[in-house]
Length: 108
Image 1 (tube, rainbow, N blue to C red):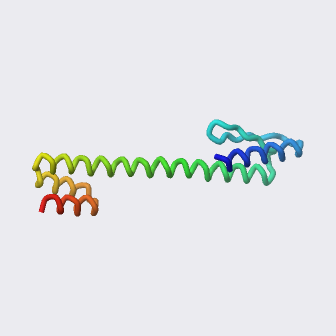
Image 2 (cartoon, rainbow, N blue to C red):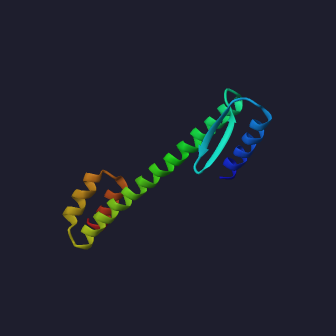
Image 3 (cartoon, rainbow, N blue to C red):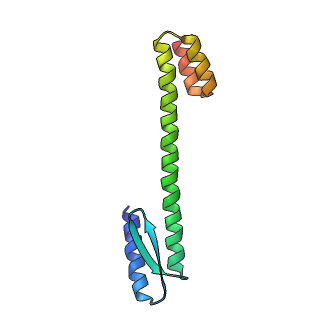
């Protein structure tokens, strides 16, 4: 966040020094403007793309963690009910090594 703010301040200062046409980029809820066609614009676009990719990666990682938690909860519920065969089948279906090992420890 601090990096985006300092980048935005630097870009605004540089764009006011160069009197050309202006191009604006949005970082989350902040807008930063630079002169178009110069190196600052390319730097701002590259930074915006890196920030977008980092946010997308964080969302993807969180979704994977949530899916894994759901898998463990479903298999755990079957084990708690005493349905070891169902738990083993579900663990095999999910094809997750850690889940299969945990299931085999709980249901030999």
